[in-house]
Length: 501
View 1 (cartoon, rainbow, N blue to C red):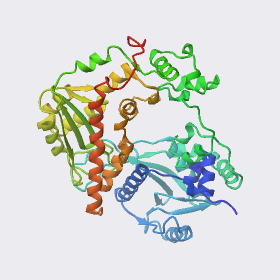
View 2 (cartoon, rainbow, N blue to C red):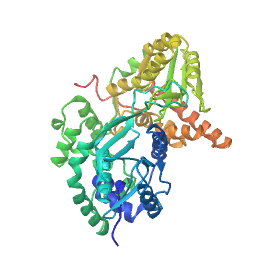
View 3 (tube, one colour):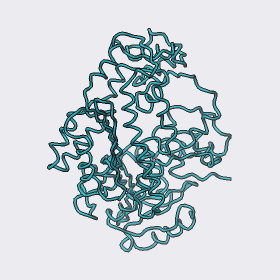
View 4 (spheres, helix red, strand yellow):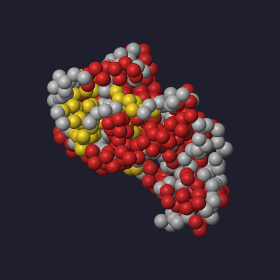
């Protein structure tokens, strides 16, 4: 049977021929996460809005499961004068057993313009390939495609009038780049058709599994591979070129790499802790933590970003806080907690600010993990709410960032090259690790929030999501309270001064 390809399958095959083979032959082994579905839903919503922003037109209604119907519906529309249906949305074309659906197809006297809509803020290389495949198929089906446009999100757009998204979509002419790829398309198609009917390619997992897109078959592929090194050299942070050099030299396990191969003190520290199983804690770290005065406030945000802005005054993809957790600790050791979470779906920003300013009082260090994130959110809010700007900027001035302190003064080999709070916490307080929570990371929190604010979500489900979100965010700040103390960790001081830079 002749394999049928599509734009997305060709892109899969370009990324990894094994991925294409699995999509065609073992699709049930794919595993998509909730965050991927959330991104897909947002992209779909943007595509629907883009039709209005492009001026409207005729939508080919047959879905992707009814290819013949879509092709027939498209052909019927194309047989009508272009003045009657100048713009088609989702038209279907087929050429040499490759089928595509085009986001928008504008017909004119002297030829057609193919428009690809992407919910991104710029033109990317993979977008050019998307359009190149579609152009090749449309031309093969008899259309005179003379221009190719990429329509994407303008990230400078600010949503100022309810329901008015004029200016959200911007178009870029990519015709020249698409034309340059046309000679390559038939070669790629012929190659991938062979891949589809031959035995599964013997391709090992690697960096291609996440570039340019994450692969839903990753866990399936890894399950059939030999176990990797217990501490692979690629756990070294920010060391791409070094990792490649070590791998080329035959090193697989970090424990086998001599210090002479490592260029700086940070990487040597990671290697030493991994080899010796001794946790690194600088001699001065405890003094630094103890010196942070009281009262202490421990703060963490959860945020959401929308492709299509939902709240007035916001931009596409702007990271907007909808929740915070704050633990406070007095000099006596007394600890209290307060939090904020808005699941109404309406803008929570003004109320978020009011509750936040009340929670952190006016004096005392505000301890965060990765100050850049929370500070950026507060600067955005300061710009949006001038009357609260001064108070928000004071909050930023009070922030103490635990992340660089831990990066400089602490390492446990189970962190595996990461200083995220989720990597550090289990090495000091495994009882507080996130495994017992339904929501275990920020992307899951975003997916839960998106589900909770949908109008069709039942009340009992929204209540459950509320409890899960509150528990997750509270764990982040409780973790920081715990990470302020090292005495009960059992960590061994293995060095008396900060490592060489």
